[in-house]
Image (tube, rainbow, N blue to C red; front, top):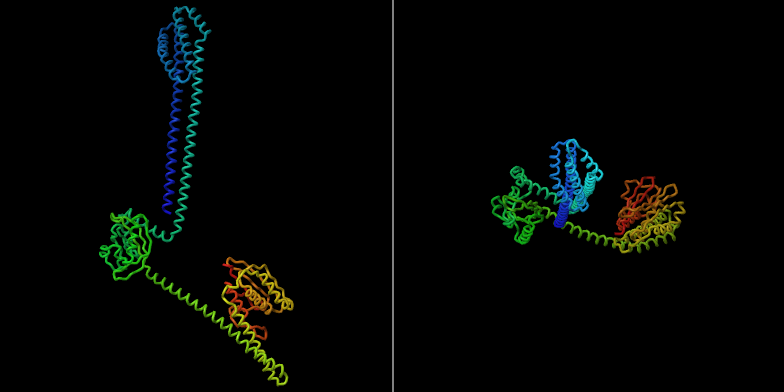
Length: 602
């Protein structure tokens, strides 16, 4: 589990790192594209600036010449020459900046022609000018207005500026689109990484929860103890007193041993007191010295496992030898710590010798109980066989006694005195009751404990057969029998028929002055079917609820109600054979409801 979690965590981190690298590479690439586009935008702005600068110089040159012609002030000529001095250089610069645009190159060539023509015209106007005479220059300027050199210069510049502004808008739009794309892609990648991190984190949490459930109780104690030791180790100076209390005053034996040499490095007072060794004796020994000889190979194998997994904690059972030679059974929990520069392990020991003894005693007790149960089952079987044989063998002499008594009553009835007739009647009645008792006892012994006759039984059919048996009695008593929906159960049909027959018979027998009303219901429970047979009869006092299920126990005089008192005992035995129980709820003159359960098939 730990390796799987580490693998998933490693894969998650690797994917996250790869995603971050993709984000970084894409961001750099898109940023460079934005930078390149920015350079283009700056280049366009530079072309615009240079174009406007050329226009300004051309216009300034023309204005200064015209001002000179109007005023005759030579300072305007100086300013005109200053504007004209840098104009060729600026045109060359503008042509270099637009080298990638043939349309602009053509416009610059046209612009150069118009500027040259305008310059020639203005220089000619200067030569024609005389103080106080403006006719010739004015005519020349008027003619130039008809040719439109200045107008063409302005129009050409406007076209160049218009195209550059259009390019500027396009490039700014492209740059903004690229920036938006970069932003959306970055957000998408960040969201993907976040979702991936969440999924990885969720999966790891689920795996950790499963591992925690597997060893929750033991791990809780070990984690708490390990966290305590880690906190103490990280801040040993500040929590030295607390550490000493936890280790030295612990009610359980504790010690620390070196993982390489197996030497004891430290022991607490409880270990010294329980094992009988002094602190000095402990520190001169190794953990091998307190093991029985036959456990040392297993110990060395465990030590090798610990060295191969240095970060793991161990929990196992061992045997230790005290100084007086006693061998005790212990639970040992060990986990790694750093102790005074040693790679060590802290061990917590719990003496379970008494528990082992109790377990052995309990195991022996269970063995004895199983043996007694077997003996009891055998004894019960013998008793049942004895009851069957005894009741069967008693029937023959009883039949002989009953037959001769009946013959005696038939032949000499009325010939003897009343006392003799009464004695003969008592003898015949006793023989008949004895016969009924033997028959019921024989029936009781036949209810076995095996499941050989079990199968699927439709209890509705069983109750129909029981109704047929008591049809005459139900009619004569004007009884009403209400049967609900009945289930199929796993059981012995003969015995279930006898069970329902006995309970229905009792409901008909112990009725009150009212016409009997019998309700039979079934209810499904998780592990069984619960049946109920309710009547409106004379009822039973709650103090006799347990007595009625005991064999040969009667609540009424035989002269009032016939029977041997074995019917409900047979019902109890049948129900218990079917894995259920039987009980009654009743009150005098309030009727009775008998409940019993039948276990579902395993």
